[in-house]
Structure formats: C-alpha cells, structure tokens
Image (tube, rainbow, N blue to C red; front, side):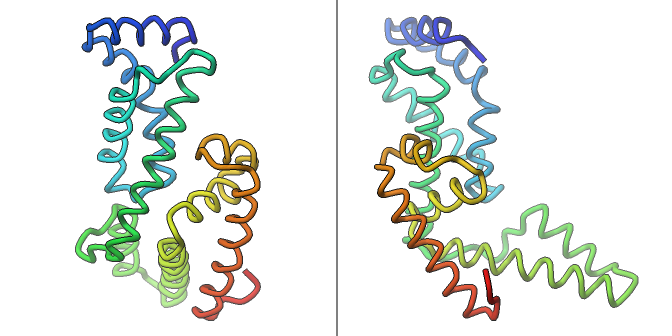
Length: 195
C-alpha cells in the first residue's frame, strides 16, 4: 500500500495528464478492492464490480483530497459500487440458475459422491441453509442489505458504516433494525425460528 504522500503524488500526476500513472494506484489497491467487493457480491461478479470501482475512481479522481488516505476514499467507492450492484440486482429480481459458482459445483459433486446417507443429509441441510440465507439477503433493499452485512457480519461499527456508505449514523441504526426485523420474518417463512 502506498503512503498518503505517494498516493497524492500519483493522483497529481494523473490529473496533470499522465493517465497511465493510474495503473500504479490499481496495482497498489486491486487486492484491497477485490477483498471488499468479494465480501459483498456473488463470486462470478467480483471482477466486473471491481473494474467498475476503478473506473469510478478514475472518473472522480479530481474530487479526491488527501485529508483522508486514498485507501479510505477508494473503500467508500467500492462499498457504494456494491450497493449499486444490489440495486440493479434487486430491480431485476432474478438469478441465472445455470450459473453455478465453484462452491455450488463442489457441493453438487460432494452430494453426488457422498458415501453415506448421513453425509448426504448433512451436506444437503448446509447447502439449503446457505441458499435460504442468500435468498433472504437478496430480498432486502440494497442499502439495508449492505448495512446489515457490514454491521453484523463484517463487524464495522455504526459510525464506520455510516461514513463508508455516506449516510448518517441514525440511518444506519434504523436500517439495521429494519433489516433484522425483515430478516427474522423471512426466515420464519422458511421455518427457521429464533434467528
């Protein structure tokens, strides 16, 4: 990772017209962006969304000021790109059935070749729970989904979540409460109590 001064020097170089220098920022932060995006979007969409993060960063580079580290600024763009991904997904309300992730393909192989009925049952229940959770999360409004994942699964504080998503701390609290309530109702529909 670059220092604030290294990053600022690189940003200035790009803004002065040497756009190829932006590749230095991509090299420094591509794994950071991939980690963030990978935690928030389906695996098969990570490369596309990560690419979009850097496109957005390049387009809005003139708005970056070295008051905060470039990494923080880029993290904000990455999280907002993930939110936008889910907004688009939420509008479409469809998931291609034919696109198996690597995990799903491995699970299918394991189930097909499971030697005992107990192992088959265990794998089936685990995959079913994972599928239900994914379906329930996918049904939440995009920003509620991001807030819930960040505060409950990734353990960001409310103020960190608010800052990174560009909303107020009060909004984070309201969205977390609302998302948890909705999550419980939806899980109850699937026969999962006490979630």
